[in-house]
Length: 206
Image 1 (tube, helix red, strand yellow):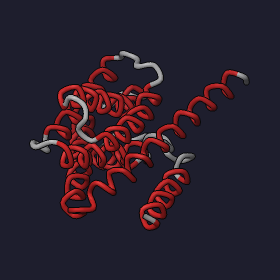
Image 2: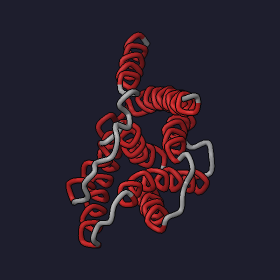
Image 3: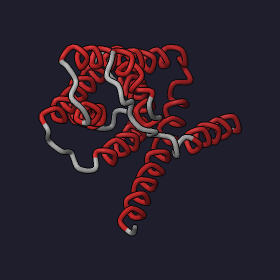
Image 4: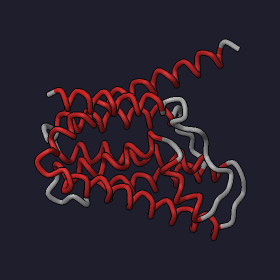
C-alpha cells in the first residue's frame, strides 16, 4: 500500500512539473521529422496517446481498435483544420481527453465499448486539429504535408504500441498501474483546464 501511494505521488509530481510546458508550441516547419516529433511536443499529447494504447490492451479483446479509432479521428481533425473549420477551444478538448482517459482507466470496462471508442475518436480529432493549426499558419506543398502526416502516423502508432506493450510488461500489476495512471491523468487534465482558464481570463483582462 505504501509503495502504491509513493508511486502515485511521484507520478502526479512529474505530471504537475510538466503543466507549464505541456504545450510549448508547435514547430514552425513541416517535414517528416516535424510530424514525427509532434506527439512529443506536449505531455498532454504523449499521455493520451500512450494511455489509449494501454486502455485498449487492458480492456478490449481486439486491442488494435482503440489506436485505429484514435488515428482515424486524428486525421479527421487534421482534415477539418485544413478545410478551414474552427474548433473553438480545441485546447480544452485536448485537456478534456486527458481527464477522460484517466476516468476510463479508473472504471475499466464498465461502459459500452462502442461509446468509449467514439469518445476515443473525439480525442484523436482534437489532437489532429492541434496539428493542423500548423498547416493553416503558412502555405506548404502537398509533398511536405504528406511527409509530415506520415511522421505523425508513425509516432502515434509507436506510442500506442508502447502503451499496449506496457500491459504485457506489467502482467499482474496492470490493474494497480491503471489506477495510478488513471488518477494521475485525471488530476493532470484538471490542472490543464485550470491553466487554460487562467490564461483566457488573464488575456481578457489585459
